[in-house]
Image (cartoon, rainbow, N blue to C red):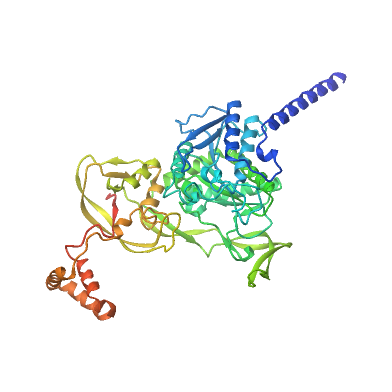
Amino acid sequence: MRLTILYFFLLSIISCQQSTQEIEEVKEWQTPFEEGNGNQTATYEEIITFYKELANSYSTISIEEIGNTDSGLPLHLISYSKNKINWNSSNEGQIKILINNGIHPGESDGIDATMMLLRDLATGKLETNDNLIFSSIAVYNVGGSLNRNSHTRTNQNGPESYGFRGNARNYDLNRDFIKADTRNAQAFYSIYHKVNPDIFIDNHVSNGADYQYTLTHLFTQHDKLGNEAGSYLYNTIQPQLEERLLERGHIITPYVNVYGKSPEVGFSQFMDYPRYSTGYTSLWNTMGMMVETHMLKPYKDRVIGTKAIMEEMIEIGTKNITNIKAARIASFNHYSQSNFYPLNHKINSNKVDTLLFKGYEAIIEVSSVTGQDLMTYDRNQPFEKKTPYYNHFTAIDSIVIPQYYIIPQGHWEVIELLRMNHIQMEALPKDSTMTVSQYRIEDYNTSKSAYEGHYPHSQVVVSEEDVELRFRESDIIIPTTQPGIRYIIETLEPQGQDSFFKWNFFDTILQQKEGFSSYVFESSAKELLQSNSALKAEFDSIKKVNSTFAASNGAQLKWLHNRSLNYEKAHLNYPIYKVYNND
């Protein structure tokens, strides 16, 4: 009996010594957030210094400088793995999680949470399986992080000082993942394709309504992600995350996508098009989510909640690795066996989920500033109500998947973006004449206001016809039977929500380069009408029904000129071509 008591006494001493050692070790690696008052976030210099010192002390942590940003400084990729990472390998035996922080530096919750999380992984405070590669971009918007102040986040409760939303060139980086106007986006391409994550998390802070939740999640839209990956994300990962967080005392709800109205009337899931981080990563069937903490909750609670989400996603990922890998592989295989690709998803209003939403009563007051009605929320009147949630979307367009796209080498900017995204391509070995399919831009709208450095097009209408064209040696052929098929189609199909055409890459075809003098073309127009009775009949018909056209000499001659041999072939003809499989 005495020996037994002595044995347990010694075990208790050893256990206490180990616990004390672990506490002291973690205390040694306290972050600026932990050393502060709970309402402070680390500066850019403090973040990078912390990670460099952590990597120097623990072999499980690595830090790499990758690419460049508009600020002139590189991105830093921090990775944790119990085994040395070989980035030249696909690492498909491990679950790969990539975190993005500081895309909007004022939304700094993820920066501080990830510093603590990587510390806990390195020191062993957070135990995990051997099959994990956990990587994080320390600060994505470096320029915005360096532009530190304490006033621009009008709606946000802390931290005391933080970075600015715009980057070094005032771009919102979470609108740049397709157009890649910034060096930041181009460096992200290098990181994303290096890691090839199974799970991607982008940490944010919300804006909009008030409600009881500190945490909300914005998973990439599951119908748009589609196939097995979309189904697994919606049916397994999302409910598991919600349940695991609830067990830890963290309630979470889908991102509250409302502006100017109270949430309980119902709201829809935010559609993350490819311009956004999770929309971009879904093009490679990565299961992505944005964390959106609530702007008005205490900063400390938001950071702790963000850390809890990442911890639980690590657990979900490591324990479901086989199913996650299988779902991604099946989704990659889907389009190699399909003839059609869905485009342009819209809300399916006939299919709705119900949330038991925890909010606050909205009340209408009179603004003491404007004297007009002002909607606000009364935190003394919390409620729990059944709320419609529209999170099912349907594609309203589709295209037949071609065997190849052909891009003339003169469109080097587009070709370079494809290369940055590891799109497989080959150059024509010699000049060749081919029958290809070509789009003509029949109609489109253009934004009247600048949006992230562009005037994007929308509501694009195209027609398609077969033409015989001569291509030059070294023009580029893009096969669609490759992992990047979704990126290829979403960017090269002009009617896509975030196509290169939408983002003004091909605006030169929208402007005619050659003109004419009316007195010179008059005789040619007369001959054209005399030689083409069908054209004359159409011309006369338009004059009868369109008085404006009939009264305009210039409009009539332009109409005829555009149907003459003098009309330039480049105008409105989309310069990306398709070859279909004739089998």
